[in-house]
Length: 288
Image 1 (tube, rainbow, N blue to C red):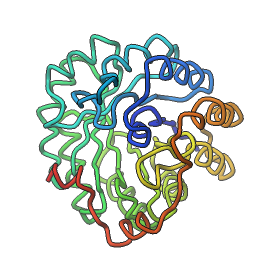
Image 2 (image 1 turned 180 degrees about the vertical axis):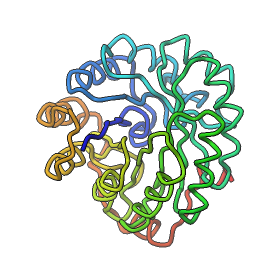
Image 3 (image 1 turned 135 degrees about the vertical axis):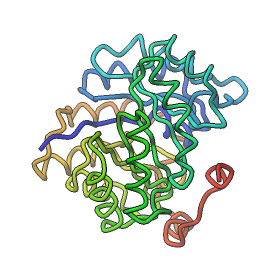
């Protein structure tokens, strides 16, 4: 059994460092991750293409340019949120060498992705629709949304546990239901609000996901994302081949990511409570 690894340290992790990644830091980490045989690096501001950079910060396009120069075999991806990014932003992403666009929409509002799927396909991008807060829909309804998105041209569907609200059964039921409805690949993206990001990611793979997201050191807002080193380690121990150099991942995390972290990722009571009660953060509420 094989799985492809998508690293989101330099995009989702941006939330945890106040959007402060520089082109030099992006180039350095991407160069090393390319050597570690990562399938794709997702790069940019937390809100992706079209997001507003902080004062003295760098827009997603500048970070993508730096990443492109450092990646030989690893694909270059970024996030695109309708309403934040525009069709013109997609064109700019192509101009700087983008391979994959991940169109992020609330699973309950997935139709908002459709015009951008079509635009991205015209630009010859590989398109993944990222269904945020996938816990909001029961498995069969999520599967129905995924089927429509495939029919509209999406090349991949990512099931996003955007607020760490799912337990193993929630993940498995949704992955299996989505996979039964579509023929394109399925991915899983997890957050650590209840301490389940790594186990949920692996459960998703065992249930049939061909792609799995993670961040080095679990870098991400709040309690963070699935720790990529741990995801790779647990996958390999379960007989799931990632093709990734685990020891090199640990070195990159220790030497190039940990020094950029403002604080270690912690599992805090407020985050556990948010996952437990399925509390939507403001950034997602604003997309409803």
